[in-house]
Image 1 (cartoon, rainbow, N blue to C red):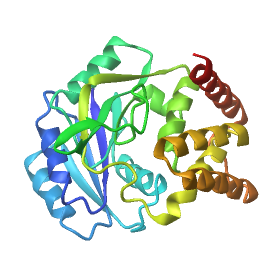
Image 2: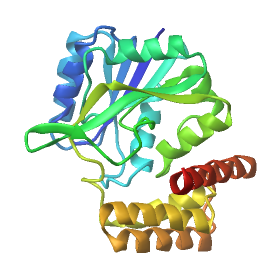
Image 3: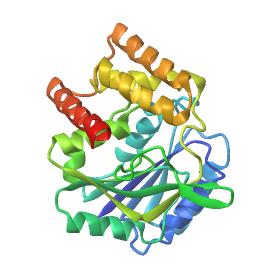
Length: 283
């Protein structure tokens, strides 16, 4: 299977060399890797150049965009700037972040998943963060969910879901649409990916309302949105999360923001979410 990878990078001089080393040391090398330097002001470009000069399968692309780290739109815009430089001769397309370290068998194991399970559309490992000198599971998502920093898509699934949405919530809606179009999501829980920057650490204050906006754009409806926001608020012990999520939802509705999914897809998503809620409460 031909593996193509796109890595958006903005001021990642502290991490990207570690990430690219982990790629170069894979037991199965990718066919092509595009590292997109998104308006970095540090030594990110020099590090990319050093790796590309030694690895024919890796090249860098430089773009200019917003310096503000707004979840979703910035990183997916960068992803597509890299994706547009690739041909169509891939079997697996990966969107990886620059602040991860992959286990050396990551790509080989992903290929095994796709070859073994023909209906798997998205595959990946699990994120681990460092706490007190120990790597522990990053508990921001279910272990059945493939996280945004290291997602791999089967080509047919990637095209069926219409690629990645340039919005916060892209790494949730892609999973939901994967299921809508008859594909499944598979994690290999033996693949421990080191996540060097905990989720949300570099987000700006302006991003606080965007999760609620994402709920609206995914057509959750107000009741499911409140339940999702409340769950997150309790987990993080922050009432402000609930307030901001609901504010974001209402603001998006008031401004008639464009939806990320069709009416039929939204109906499927709500049904899926209600099923999950019932299982959580009643087992």
